[in-house]
Picture 1: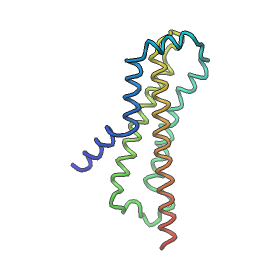
Picture 2: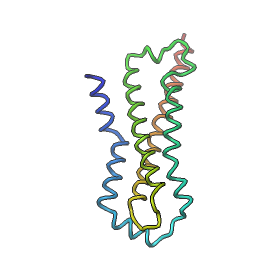
Picture 3: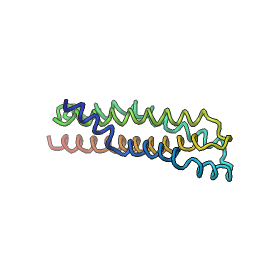
Picture 4: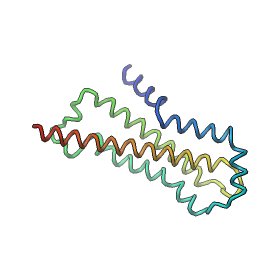
Length: 158
C-alpha cells in the first residue's frame, strides 16, 4: 500500500503534472489568443517539426539511462540497491519515465499536425511537450549525478 500511495503522490504532485495541466489550460483558455499570435507570424516549419521530436529523444535517453541510474557501474558493492529508500527512487524514476512517454507522444502529435492551419493545438502540444520533457530530462540527469556522488563518497569511505 505504501508503494501505491508513493506512486500516486509522485504522479499527481510534481512539476510534470503541473506542466501537463498548464498545457491543457493553455489550450482551452488561451487558444484564441494563441491562434491570433500564430496568424501574425510565420514560424519556420522545419525548425518546429524538428523541435517536436526532442521529447521523443529525451524519452529514449531516459530508457537507456534508467539502467545506469538504478544499477550504477561504480556500485560494485550494490550499496544503492541495499539502501532502505531505494524503492522510492525506483518509483520516482518510473513516474518520470511515464511522463517522458506522455510528453514524447505529445511531441509526436505536434509533429504530425498541420502547422499552417492557424490552430493553437499543435503549438500548445509542442510547448507542453518541450517543457515537460526538459523537466523529466533534468530530473533524471540530476538524480544520476547525485547517485554517482554518493557512491563515490561511500566507496572512498570503505
